[in-house]
Image 1: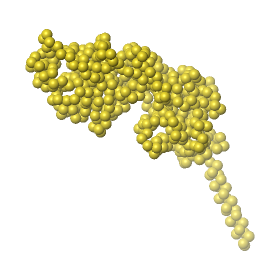
Image 2 (image 1 turned 90 degrees about the vertical axis):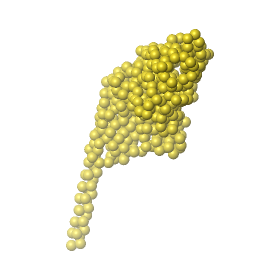
Image 3 (image 1 turned 60 degrees about the vertical axis):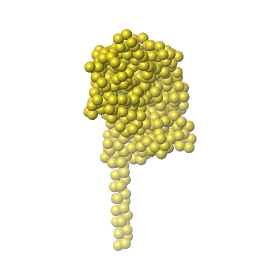
Image 4 (image 1 turned 30 degrees about the vertical axis):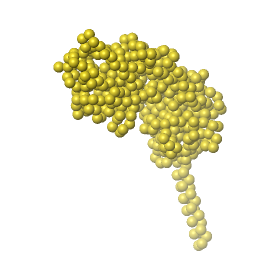
Amino acid sequence: MKYRLLTGIVALLMLCAGLAGCAMMQKVQCTISLDDMCDSFAPNRHIMVVGTIDADRALPQDAVMEVTLSDQEGNVLRSTYSKKKDSAIFWYGCPELTGYSSEEEKISDIERHKMVELIVEDGNNPMDTICNAQIKCWYSDNYFKALLVNATDIAHGLPMDDGMNYTDANGEPYTSWPKGEYVLTASLYDSNKDLLAECRKLITIEDGKSVVMGRYSPISNLDNYMKLEEQLGISNQNDIVPGSLSFYGSSIELPKMVNCVNTSRQLNATTHGIIYNLTEDSTCMTNDLAGIQERGQTNDRASFLPYCYDIGEPEITIGGKECKGSLITMENNIELTRIDKREGGQDNFIAPGSELIEESVYRPEEEVVVDDYDIGIAGVIMPFQVNQEYIHFDSVNNYFKFSTNANMIRYTFTRGNNSIEYEKPVGVTRQYADGSLSSAVYEFYHVFSNEEVFDTAKKVKLKVELLDNNMNPIEDYQRELTLVKL
């Protein structure tokens, strides 16, 4: 009896083990998708691949995710992979990193947003594998991210150094792929190399027709930036710029890589530049506009088309009401956007949300009635090509720096046979609602008392001129109009 009972128990255990084995042998049922990715990219730039995974249960811990780029004949040009789920070692100490306020913030953002550009095999010896482009991949149960490297350096096709000099696993350099159509493939395998899921996406490497240049701040300016992209038919949705976490709202970046990508976008395309809030150290100035200057394209409207706000701001309080501006293409070298009627005020300082402006005349052309008010003159200078002596390459940060050569505004008030001149510097400082300050290099705001303008006259002719760094007037950079006191 005992023997029969023991035999039955053993049989039952064997049956359970067999059933469990069958369950373990069943493959995960899953699909992967690249649908949210862009399908067109500029030449000579890296590509960040992002996709989703939909599985009926958790993926095996040792599944393998591989992302490849192939030509139309099926030849694999690039490949990168990850052999372990939700596992990556990031090199937080990479000297190329910028944009963080603390070590904790840096580590948190890199981990949370999976900055695959920094994946290494050994955190204790990161220099051994940081250049290996074939391990720049990460995946979880529902998402994957991978970097496909275009070229190793300038000698192999990059428009400028990306700061990382990625190679294949053997240390061999990559040469830039030519323009044309390619196939992105994302494949998920189990540990036995059996395919679990795969998807493909056709992408095109081609020169873009247009690119928008502008600051992402304040948010009202970003909104108009995105509207302009939409109007121009530009789709950068889910084009995560390699080297940057700005897509996720983080300021951490590898600036040399970001500059390299931005430069590749601009080459052979028209840059639609929003001349608002361009600070001296912004990417717009140090990479985008500086690159246009270095290539001698600033005055070429097929290469660079500048915009400004019709009222000088995306939004500003005037007469106690919030007024919203619209982007317009600049028609004048000095675009006078507003003449404000106000009481007092400070040169080159604007607080858009709390300005004590009674009334404004937008885009004044010929004659403006200002009555007994003091006046504030708001304007934007159209960027112009500077001589090579004003352009310098910063090899440490991998960008060009240049002097705008837009130094001062000269105002000449003529009352009958008498004239008086005032010279005031270019450059507006704005204070936004959150208290932050921002200094713009191509804008100005100058305040004059009613007495300075009119003295005892009722009608005054005003001439506005731009002066260069040597205090000489710049040709074609002047405006004239008449101010009237009733």
